[in-house]
Image 1: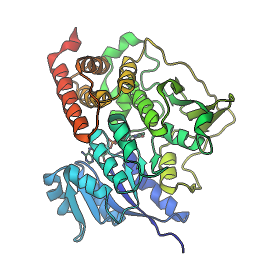
Image 2: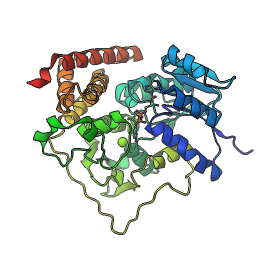
Image 3: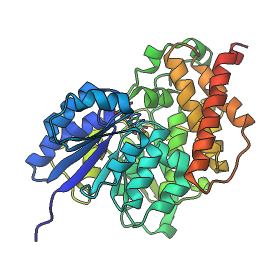
Image 4: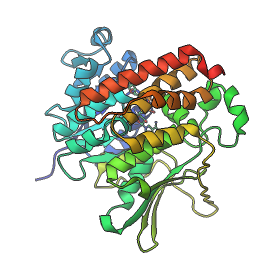
Length: 392
Ligand code: NAD
Ligand code: MG
C-alpha cells in the first residue's frame, strides 16, 4: 500500500517561515512529494491568511481573536472552519486529519500548540524555538516517540542531520554557529545610537523582525543554546556557540575521536523547511546551492565582554525553571519597545539583565507556572521601559 499524503497544519502561515513554507510546496509536489495543507493559522493579517486559505484549499483556519475570526469568515468560502485565540491554535495542532504540524508562530504564544501537537502524537516540525526556550522540559516530556520533533531552526536542523548514526557516548561537543548579526563590525560605543532600520538589516539571513533584532543582540544564539540543550539532551558544558560570519556551516558535531561532522548549506531557510516536510526523504532541486571553490570559512570565539544579552540569557538557561521563560518574555517586550522607538538598542540587554536580576526562579511542573512567569516577565520589562532607567 502506498502511504497517503502528509497532511499539514501550518501555524504562523503569514510570517517569514510560514510564507517560505508555502513557497516550497509547488516544487516539492512537482517532485512527487505528496503534501496536503489542511490547516493554516496566523495572528492578525487576516486578508493575507484568507488568500492563503483560498489558494491552498485549507479547510481550517485560526486567527488571534474573535474580531479577526469575524473578519476572515467574510473572506472565506463556505465550509472552511474558523477558530480563534490560543484554543484555536491548540485545536489546529491536534486535528485528527493532521499528520505534521509546522509551528512557525513567533514567541511564547507557540508553546501550547507545541504541547498539543506532541500530546496528539503529531510529527512536529519546530521553528518556534520559544517552545523549547520557555518550556524545554515540559516539551521534551511530552514527546511520545523518538524523532517526533524535527527542528526547522537552521543550526538545530544541522545538528539533527549530523547526529544521524552517532551514538550518545561518541559526542564530545555540539557546536552552533552565529553570524554576529547586523552590528558585528560596529564599535560597542556606537550601539546605543543604532536605529530599528539598521538592526533589521541582517547581513546573511532574511527573517521576521523579532528574530532579526535577537540576532543583532545575540539573544537569539542564547535561545538556540537552550533549544539545543533540550532537543539533544546534552549537558551545558558540551554545547558551544562560535562566530562564523559566512553562515555556511550551521552546526557541527564534535566526536570523541577528534572528528568534526559539519552541516553546510546556503543561508536559505527553505532548505531546512523542505527537509522537515519530506524527512526522512530528501527533496531534490534545491532552491540554492553552495559553490565550494572560492568559499572561505572563518570561526572566532564569542567575545566575553561583548553581547551582554547573550550571556544573561545563557545564564537563565543554565538556571532553568522559570528563568528562561522570564528571559524570553522580557525580550519580547523589550524588542517591541526598541522597534517602536521607545528604547535604545542597548536597553534590550540591560532590561533582560535587570528583569532576571529581580526574578525569583522557581521549578516548573505545569504549563500554567510558565505562563505566570511569562506574565511576570512582561510586566517587569514593561516597567523597565517606562522607568527610563536605561537613560542613566
Ligand atoms: P514572523 O514574525 O515573520 O511571523 C510570525 C507568524 O506568527 C505570523 O504568521 C503571525 O501572524 C503569527 N503569530 C504571531 N502571534 C500569533 C498568535 N498569538 N497566534 C497565532 N499566530 C501568531 O516570524 P518568523 O521570522 O517567521 O519566525 C517564526 C518562528 O520561527 C520564531 O520562533 C523564530 O524564532 C523561528 N525562526 C525563524 C527563522 C527565520 O528565518 N525567519 C529562522 C529560524 C527560526
Ligand atoms: Mg537559527
